[in-house]
Image 1 (cartoon, helix red, strand yellow):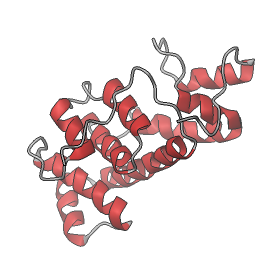
Image 2 (image 1 turned 120 degrees about the vertical axis):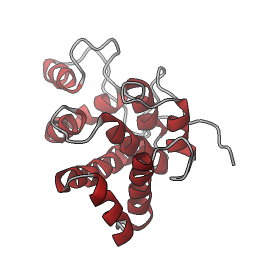
Image 3 (image 1 turned 30 degrees about the horizontal axis):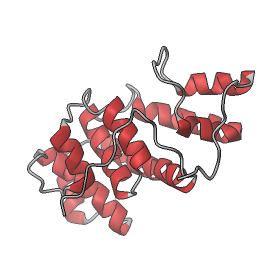
Length: 189
């Protein structure tokens, strides 16, 4: 599909180059992501978004990396955002302890998929309930509260919402898939 909003292309003016450098990890071996190059078309918006995105992917987040990536991958999969799912599967999946079975299950499975641990399944149920209803049932909240602190629960909710935003931007603008990123696994249905 052709992008609806063309990302900026090199050569970048100094302000755009600086903003893209802020979005990419230092020394990254890949060019600035198409999503970032799309966002910097509106530099004030990109500048406003960066601090929250950086926090959610940084060391300050109180959630384990595995939980963070399960939330991100499941939200992106439920939103049909192959772009962001594929970037995270490659860039963060292995480092977060997610193998092919878990990554496939985030895209195609259910909370009771055998690839998921009980903690994994609780996170998947959270994402699914939020996606399907916009709410979290009392039974699920009780289960989550046994596993994570109130601060971590807030982070789970914000993380899920943030990746809805990212999915909406990537899907709505039709950001082109990164050539090195993973693709959704084929449907097993």
